[in-house]
Image (cartoon, rainbow, N blue to C red; front, side, top):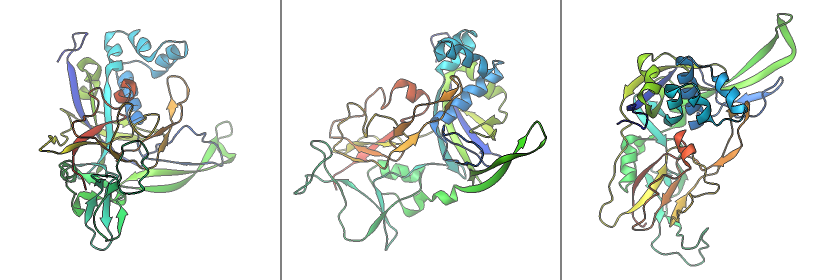
Length: 362
């Protein structure tokens, strides 16, 4: 499909294999005698790594783009000064990243899943057909999430396989084997480092620091998808060399395939109502998207996200994201917004990706 410049639009599936530990941190200062802790990779980290890689492989230093942005140009305007091919990088859309274990794609477990403590069986919470006495909804007309049964349950911490995701989106409960615990996907390692005084070529006084890094398990890779002008994305296809991802100059091997990620496509059936499951975090300025009036919602605790803006040379604003795994239950006949859940600029860097499924009253 051609874009407005006449260039073909290309969709690529990207797999990033860590060659060592990885490091993803926010914009808090990292100084001597401090301890920096890695979190999990975010969509903006992926998008930034892709843009930086594309610029460098097209022969443009990211610092040149940053200079233009600091002089008042928008990101789109700054790229356009280098010609149409470089300008096409502004149209590159990123989705992800998601973990994959043994070539099986994983998504964060839906927040309405529970595990029975005695049997280990997975069950799901769904909206009641009518509110019980004394129910105080967070918004008018909302219904509580419920399950029938007396067995004790606990929240589900981990990731859902694609088979489990399909079962969930079809309105059922995944099987126990569909859940992968975080410890099987990655771990964290604590390390201590010493800064060097370049002038003396010796250990710098007071420059001991601690760092906590992400250590992916064997067979764990990061999977993403990108779409954009073919000429802008050409370096990824022609030269799938290692890519810097995250902080501390860590690299990942890359595998590039044409085509998109195959998400379960579950159509509405019978009297089933639709639900929306976030697979990446999203910023709404609140707990739900603008204009959406769900009848129920399973929303975990907010995640604070910041980062470093390389183009502007400063920290990004701190935003409190609704986390991946959040579920919104829509009323009969309602559908998620056709334009997506988040602002276009956020969607272009991977925030707010979601899949749709069905639900029935508990």
